Image (tube, rainbow, N blue to C red; front, top):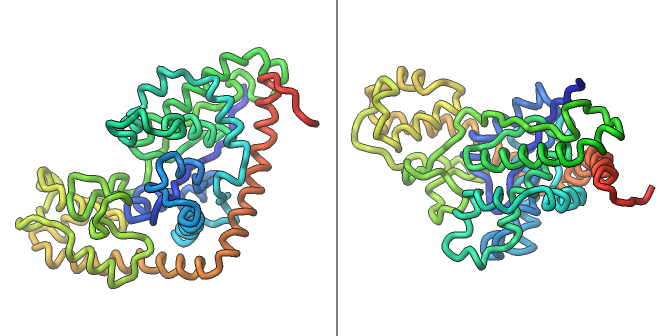
Length: 353
């Protein structure tokens, strides 16, 4: 029984500037995985337009943000030679496979997707079909490359479970056609059932203004997050203004219970330094936040300001970014096209040869 080739797929939307949560929650891990896996990292611009123009900002903003997210990947350490970096819309097979999967997925499955309910809000009747169908396109993104592993956060785990359900149903529905063509996957079926991978060292970074809310690009306060484009002075200012409580830092992790802002800042320090929370508290426990924030400023500036500087350098030549995306799209399509052709043959489409 043949095994699937180990391959990682992940992506981020170009809806606005990436921030510290994206870096600690995903990008650090993406960089590390390049050493152990074949990696495909996508800027998912087709997903970005599933909500209204007021969310994604229109054509010019989408173009700018797509290039900026690609630059963030590279500046954070994703190597476009070692990994594939591209934007989703350049590989038309994503949309083709999503349509096939629309006939495999069931309404009951999509009706259970909690993220649609959260994003659509009370006015669900006015939400786009694209927003409702978002998880099916995500399944196509992953399975188009027969990805075996997907780095996901908590908010995307349900979508990955749906991708597994779609893969399993496709394998079951077309099992005879797959076997007849001897496509090399044996009893495992045509598509793998992708496995989730734990995200980076701080998979859930919270707002600097409210430790009970996740750090978000959509928060109206820019002081709630550290953007990857922030310069050293801005990073320092945001850390110093971050919300804390009047108590000293505890010496043990148990002392962080019920103190969300303290736990968040300790977690950020741990993520940026590569230490555990316990190790951070052994160093700073008993001290006041003023001293700890000073150390966190130094660490954050040292780690993040070079990323911002490299992003500015890359974005000064957008033709270079576009060339990286185009080259990555070509490499992605080399993988995607034969898989999509096999899907067409399995389904029974007559195609050009």
